[in-house]
Image (cartoon, rainbow, N blue to C red):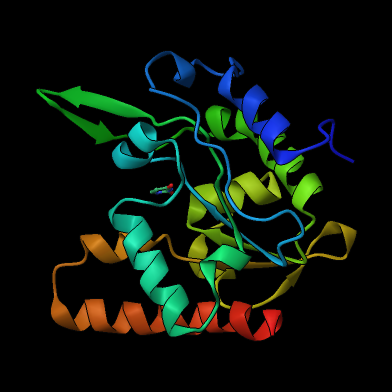
Length: 198
Ligand code: URA
């Protein structure tokens, strides 16, 4: 059971969250987006620069990769709930730029309460964790992507769990061959989610 009646009410409370210090420098909290009752929930790491400014999850470069992959496996994003393990952007100012910084365990665990509220309201049958921060956010304990990716795992309340890489991992690869291989692996992980949702 969620403490909130609607996703809008939940988003309003997330906006005034002070559970960890990240709210101090971020522009705004970025709540999850998508329909209540979505069968699949995607969990990323934290908003990036673009998301921090727009207030919407996965609308920057990593979001474009996620969108492209979802289109490839025929899983419409509008039917999914897309959120992050951490709701505020963590960064280090570098001149005019804001460089992404990984959230630490304390920040992920502090934000887990919000993820649980989103999960209770949306009640997805499958939660897909994108990267290690998301895995910790969902499971409440650390696990590596390589240990758990690519297979459906039973979660509490009858839900399933699937882990894969964070799409920004693909952006960091330099070699064409690595990019191609990892893109194909990402698609085959997401195909499991799409297949489950059909
Ligand atoms: N990376 C994430 O993990 N989430 C976003 O919303 C954007 C980039």
